[in-house]
Image (tube, rainbow, N blue to C red; front, side, top):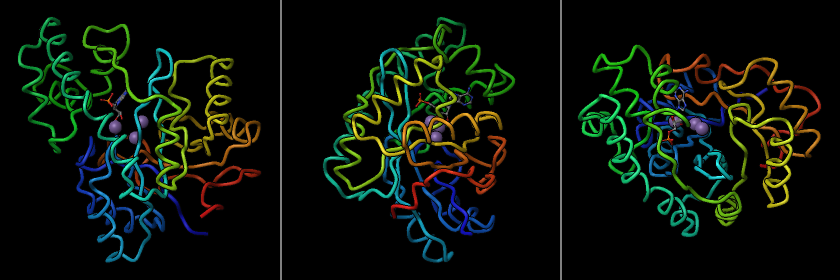
Length: 276
Ligand code: AMP
Ligand code: MN
Ligand code: MN
Ligand code: MN
């Protein structure tokens, strides 16, 4: 059985490894199909593709799109996209545009919370001038010795209700799905277990997603517990969505799953790759 890891990040967004390093690590860890899914970005795919050819594994071209659904930020994974598609590239560029202004506001909010120079500090951790994220603020605050771990930074400062959180409007769910489909890709709801919605809210989200033409749901994710693997397998069956799996790798030791560290897909699901 080939091994699939369909969610990972490089230095083109908030990962710590270059695209080639991600692909090489995936190959070393026994992954046969690796998707690079940088946030709102496809610029690392060409390098990843070359590295995959050298390593003898298959690169699945992807991205992870930031979406606003009501007050919630939802991530939609794009898989098997044509990265040269203009509709998708322009859509991703439109999502990225707001990130710098948002980051300056996060910096100002953190300054008010007692961390002067947070924006400049975060910039030192940015690895692509096209993309600044909350992760870069988190890494800065930890490296500067202000907070113990990036997990703590998020919990105490960067999530809704906390002093460094800045609301932001990303793409709509329909836009994200349409752009991905324009590029002949599959649209997959990322790490559904992370969203702060109850089961009625989850059914509403997945129902809308499917009605807009969304294709799949990430069942296996490092954001999920073992119980959530089973829970989201159930949602996949109920909503007739394809099942996906991804470690959401950001760098060595950054989450409890490394590249390829995924259990087998639960039975009775149709995986995204059945359509490739
Ligand atoms: P942004 O797109 O700028 O809102 O940043 C989102 C990124 O922050 C996610 O892709 C994760 O990499 C990271 N992140 C979000 N929540 C947490 C958390 N609780 N702990 C660690 N990293 C997180
Ligand atoms: Mn990330
Ligand atoms: Mn995500
Ligand atoms: Mn991700």
